Length: 180
Image (cartoon, rainbow, N blue to C red; front, side):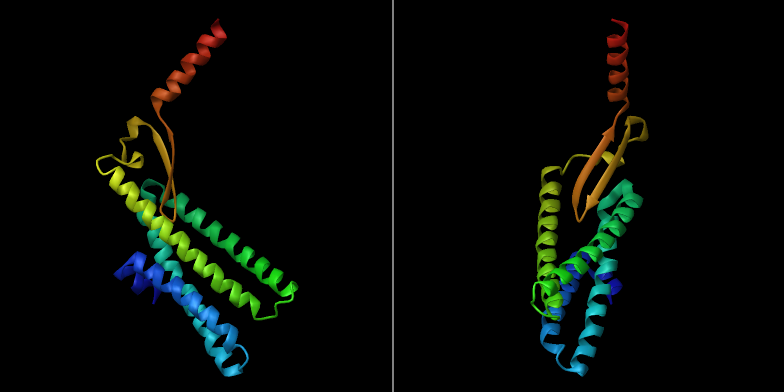
């Protein structure tokens, strides 16, 4: 399901799957009191959660340009951190006395926060594309112009560039400082 949604539209697929996960988690708070609805809810949580992956990975590959391997590694690391943080937050709300349905409610709130982050990411990407319409992306520069690592996290671009002229200027300044 997630792959088909990503094939149709990556951004719409992300919005649909994150929204579906938030809604299913919110409904699970009520559905957990009946074994049959709880079982259906668990299935839907798994389906909605796994539907996010293909669209998220496709979005990262689309915006990563020349640093797709780095983006994929960061995506995997971020998902591991999110997994640990979700378990920690779930433990906090249970320990605070909100009950065993509270982790699902906190998950719904986190899904809403994910929609906010996605919206900011899409708006930043549109703003960047408009403001740099004629610019060439550093990752697509000629190899002889230097090296550039571009990190994209949900559309937010961070560029780390090392250009030969910067390197040679640094070396020449260092040589001058050590010679004098």
